[in-house]
Length: 340
Image (cartoon, rainbow, N blue to C red):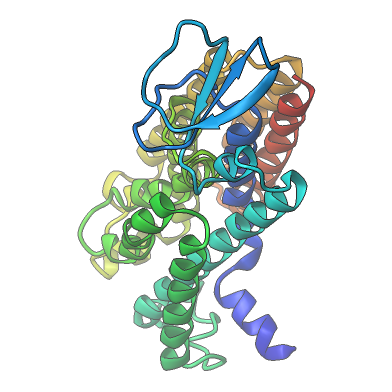
């Protein structure tokens, strides 16, 4: 159990609280708010509803028939494709939801372990991070790399069992989440790359359900990019001087604390704008807007307690405020989807 705890600490498993709620939002967006009047793709399974039979009938067609009252189109190996072609609904939903959760865990575990492996020499020099598992000798660098490889393989295998588009795009997702670890060596925009990695959660989950891209989950992904980038800049304030001494790139090391906080505020303003527009575009109900109020409130709160001259509450802003923001927001969004 001590080894398990060490590896959970290595990958900061508790930080899964940031991206996982948005993956669940993407999943239930696809399941409960899918646009059933999307264009038909030749060769994909399509169900058409006719008033004569009062039933959904399976056929393969790419033609629109004016006599049909409604039609749906999606990849035959997606969750919706399985349900509409006869699979038992509840077990199929549970199966796909489990795969999405596993994908999140494996991808994030690989990314964090690789980051710790790659940054081990810098972590050993930084008094704040010298107690981490690799520099302190709790976990060897070799074992951390093996853990990364295993997590990557499990992620790819899990994507294979979801559907084709998720599997085909899985190497791209790994490239983003693993590539982030290199970015601090050459660009202060590393925070945005981290945000991009976590923003794949709602899009990926939506693809698992529908096998298609859509604007609504992309809006939530844009919100995640700006939100994560903003709070990562706040977290990086702690290492401003160390990053400069080691010639590492970060927004605080580049702009200084005051301007870095202003940029973080701007990014969080964009994140708030994205969730507001998503609510309008998606025609959400009142529960969604309660979630938005909490999410935006937590953004405002973290900026009210972190000052350029006082970083004592950075961890509260980073973990507590953002953890509440993501979890509570997801609860209200998903509840609104079920009710409406």
